[in-house]
Length: 342
Picture 1 (cartoon, rainbow, N blue to C red):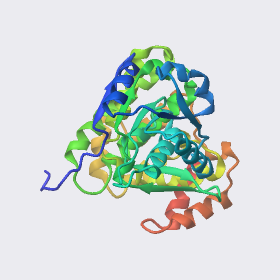
Picture 2: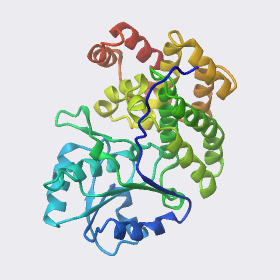
Picture 3: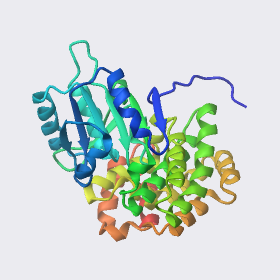
């Protein structure tokens, strides 16, 4: 039984969901008194900006893993355009870039430019007061600041239909990673535990349905709700072992975030089961069997990558990553996880 504690709810204040909910964007921008809009997006979505219903906007294009050089250029562009509102449209890289730009444009009182996130993947970057980026050396870095939190989120499944199916499904495993690592985080967190377990159940059911019916917006809405519920403890989830190990090899070797979760999550779960068997037993009740095995089966069923070697990453690179991460866990233990995923 919980003995006491504190919980800080750290998600955006307003969330709209459902097919067609992008229709709320205009009213929300008006509420925020934003009239000169900057849209932060990916190259693949530039031709679809008319679906947002914004008459004119300064567009910033961001690549995978949010290179800081592109973010710097984006800041210059929106400053020149005197932007007073930001909309991110895309996956985690576009959303994280918009977060950083919004804070870099803060007024003299420290208030960032309001940011509305419209995600087209299930990575859940829109739900956290943190942002990742790639530095000049090509390594993944990050920052945390309460001001990075988007003002609101719009989950419109209609806008996700152009998202490649493998990207959609792999970021669904990323959401599963959030839920599992949040549930296995240290300390007591009964509020987010309820949502994490529900997210896990929903993802196990709805991701195979998305594979079978990729154009079903009701299924995609269910995927989006599960991703939302997976990340109500964002700090602990983002700092979980699977996440940290994935970030260490992701940007450096060109592996997308969702895929790193596919590669590492089952093996991290087996490692953590040795130190927290009671929590893992609760996960088993939610998944119906050994949770690591069930996650591995789900990844295989969805046809997603399962081996690091598919990305031309060898043992020497994994040994370097393990050595760099060693601290709370030994380099030998971390290397063992990487090699199990190889």
